[in-house]
Image 1 (cartoon, helix red, strand yellow):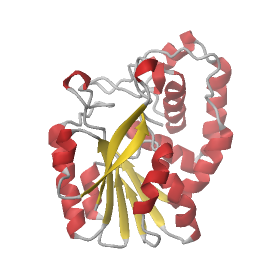
Image 2 (cartoon, one colour):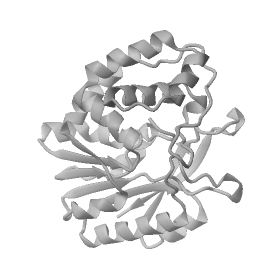
Image 3 (cartoon, one colour):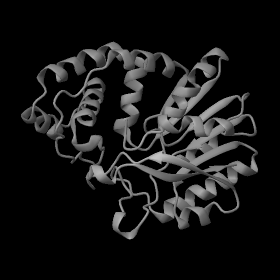
Image 4 (cartoon, one colour):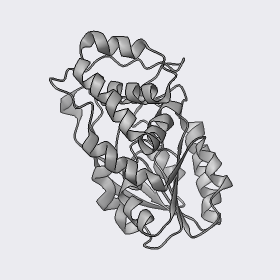
Length: 265
């Protein structure tokens, strides 16, 4: 749902996932691709997932998909029917308080903004211009209803990534961290999709959280960009190199295959 997305990388992650575990934790929720891959197993075995993020709008979307999917579909169908450039900027300027209206606004802007990029300014206001799409798919009941069914196994919370330390106990738990990626160069230092910056100090804090989880024998996966800073940060862990598709770039010619790293604990 946010920039990036891991659905195309699942096959590369599968060898590092245990076949038998108790609980799944994902503290940077984003698109939730790994959760949705594991959801059938969690559901069949009566196990729980704990999904969280610091972005209250994203958390609200997932809660509404889980708890009120038909209301959300109804509101998105209105956005689908009324979409225009004028409507886009009117919706972007709105500050909704009703959970369903907020969730529909989030999805509508995500599906119609430039390059599908979620970005906020320092005041927490969405600031991406409209994208140029002929017929964007704003309302997708065929995706939302299965997502709602999968999310029935999930607790969904607004909290910082370090809060996972309060819950994870030991080697029967899986934790997957998919933080904002470290920039690959000094000319691409974009480290915040929301008002909350995620730069080198936060990357180091995350490394310390992972170290504590490793001491508890939890299975931890963490993905990030393939750059010297990240490789050095995780030099004491198993580091795998994966091939990913770069989908977020203002120039189509610069979208393509890149490498990223997967830290395995």
